[in-house]
Image (tube, rainbow, N blue to C red; front, top):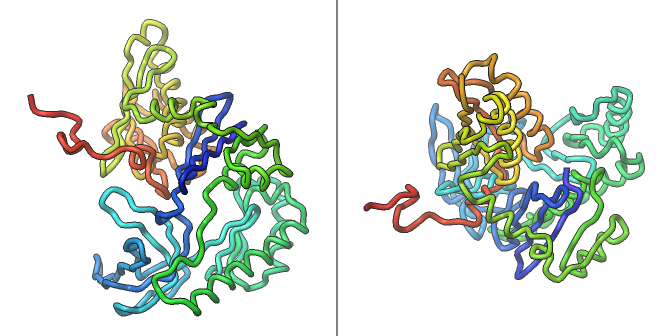
Length: 383
C-alpha cells in the first residue's frame, strides 16, 4: 500500500502518484477535457449495427467522440433503439488504441462506503469483509434503508464506517442519481451529466490504513483534505519526490531484478507479453528463486503500468505446474491489492502463465507515448 500520495495539478491535467517508501507504486493521469471512465453522458445514437449471433450494438455521440454500447446488458432489458434517439450512459472503459470508449446503460455511482446501482437489485457485501457478524450487520443496515430501491454494493471501507456515515451516503447517492436524471430531462444531447472524481479520493480511501501524508500543489485541494489527513504543500511535488524519473523508468521495456535477472515487457494491441531472462542470476541462485523474484516485480509492474487485458508471462526454466506453482502464488499475492480486477488464470498448454486484468483506463505507455512514425510500432527500422 502507498504511504504517501502526491497530487500535481497543471492546466487541467491532474497527476496522482502513490508512493511506498519513496518507490512509485501507482499513477493516475486525469484530463478533465477527455472522456474518462465513470463519467455519465446524455448521448445520441448515431449508428445501429448488427454483431455476432444476431445481437445489436450502437455507437453513441457524447459530444467529444463516439462510444460503443451493447444492446444486451445484465439486469436490463435488451435495448431496441433507433438512430437519433437519446440515451443516458456511463463510460466503463476508456478509448484504447483504435477502439472507441465503451459505455453501459447500467449505471454505478460510487461513494466511500457504497456503490449504488439504480437499475440493479439486492445488497452485495465486499468479499474482503471477512467478519460474518459485520457482514450481516452491514447487510441489514443497507437493506432496511434501501428496500427495493436499486442495487447496492457494500465496499470494504464500510467495515470501519459508522452507521450514520453509511445512512448519510445512501441518501447522498440517491440524490445524486435523481439530480443526474433531472438534468438529462432538461438538457439536449450530447451533454456531460456527471464527471467522476479524478481518482484522488479513491486512492486515499484505498490506502488510508497506511497513508501518512498527502502532498499537493493546489491550495484548494489542500484545504479540502487538511482536516482529514496530514497535507503538505509543494509547488513542484513530482520533481521533489523524483516521480517523473520513476515514470520514465516505467516506460522502458526492460526491468532489472535485484538478483541479476531481468524481465522484458512488450505491449501489443492483442496482449502484453512478459519474458523472464536469467541474465547472470543463475550464478547466485536457482531458477525458482529467479522466477519468484520476477513474479514479485511483475505484479508491481502490472499495477504501475496499468497493463490490462490478456497478459502472457514466459517464466524461466521448466514450464511445468509443479515448478511454477509457488511462483504463481507469489504473483497472485502481489496482485491481491490491485485496484482493478485481475486473475491469474494458470498455466497454458504452451507453458506460459496467463493473467487477465480488467481494462478501465489506458496503460501508462498509451497515455504518455505514441507510435513511432518510422517503424510503425515494430521497434525496428530498415538497415
